[in-house]
Image 1: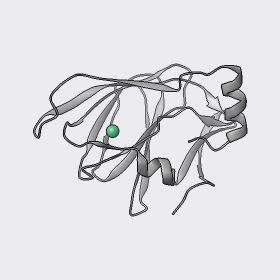
Image 2: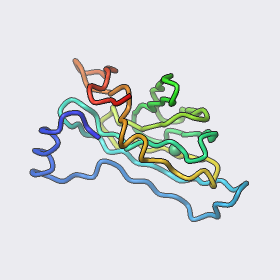
Image 3: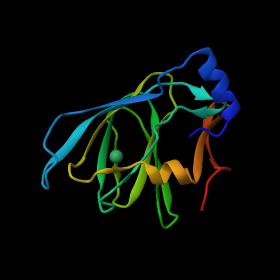
Image 4: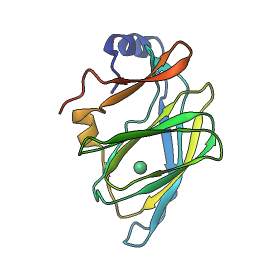
Length: 157
Ligand SMILES: [Fe+2]
């Protein structure tokens, strides 16, 4: 998932850190139900690229989602299959509405855990495979003490 494979290998050899985790409430996933929980992305970088979640589409592509930042500072990076992309910087008590059809990934650009509450239709099903194969069009990296958005050299059309 990370651009700098050498930095990643060195990091894993030294200290196999946890990048992120999430907790879902165990509710039914029938049509009409809502899935919700929290995701935690930890502060660190691989080379100059911030720790992030894998990111996913929903199997039911016509699925939107809300995220509420509870702690830390981060970015929600979003892109759709048509090539449109967007991002939102989040601080505590700020929300983002991830529109239908958009893959989304959380990135920690701060110094403490980036914790978000999320909620989406429970029968949507996750699609992690598309992002695993294609990657994201854009990467969020640290540059001169701030974040910068650059093209992903490994992105596959
Ligand atoms: Fe999601």
